[in-house]
Image (cartoon, rainbow, N blue to C red; front, side):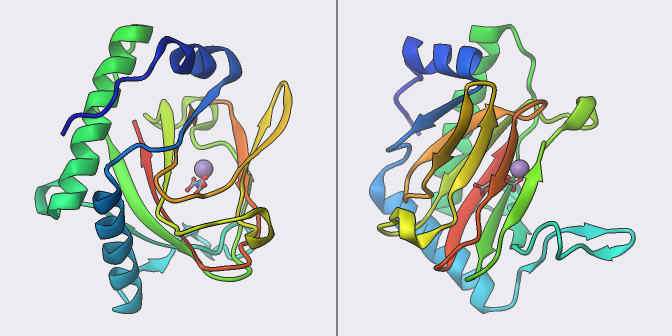
Length: 193
Ligand code: OGA
Ligand code: MN
């Protein structure tokens, strides 16, 4: 699946500001399919509370429900997502002399009131994650719907609304971020390179 490669400006934003926002990442019908698949898995009880730790489910830290995607059993829409992410990974590897090889991805559902407190995805290199990629599956979304991705950057706080087909990339090792409480059910597909 072909996507528009990241522009020089987008690459510079990722390198200098620590993040980039791509508003129309995939074809609209692919996003519709991903949205339906995410909702289906949730309504059929195939998602589990995230935040699972050895001490139990930490609902004080995060309250979303997730299910991991398996590239070996991907629907056509999921295959389109995976191949777009592979293309992105190749471009980022070449642009920044990285050697990212993996891709993990999960659907997530935040119900009304659900949130994810401020965290870093790969603190002090404690995982292989280099780049976090949040991709949103919601129909029209406005600020009053809550659920913004709040990035805490050296330049200040930056909120991104989880609008359908928007992809946000940010560095997994040092960008502190959180999901503000959703006022409406919020669907996403989060990936890590
Ligand atoms: C995560 C996360 C952000 C988002 O799952 O680690 O920070 O906008 N998600 O869904
Ligand atoms: Mn995160």
